[in-house]
Length: 134
View 1: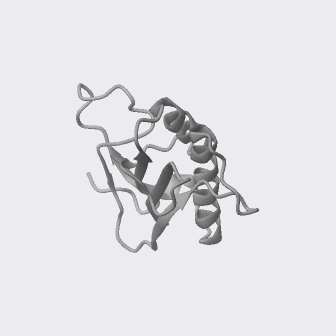
View 2: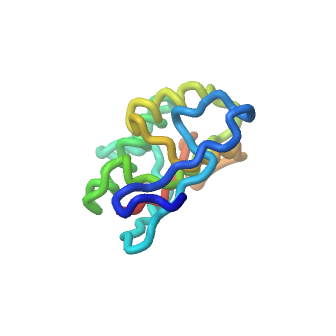
View 3: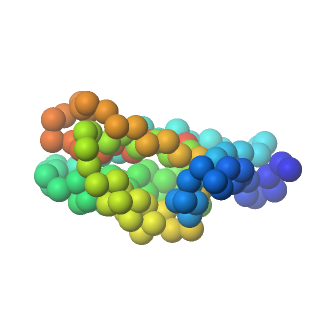
């Protein structure tokens, strides 16, 4: 079924695969006639230029920064169709999922989380990029 003209259709087709159904969908479809925004990876840099060494705080700040880009494009978290999270090394992923629930409430975009060796700056522990449509 195609999405309504004013909504992103979210598909949950493999419930046996995962239990975290509230924070992502197996697919998200953007209907025609939409503005599409590709958001560069957002990291945990605070407005003052500092970065917390704490993974959970970086998750929160990266999502605050992502929401600021959405806001600049007159979009909200509900417009996010795809989210990709790059996590450095072994981190408590529950902190990321909790941050997503707080900053992207009731949003279940298509989502991928990758564990990587490093990011562009050694202090960064998370980078989050997105695709949104309105």
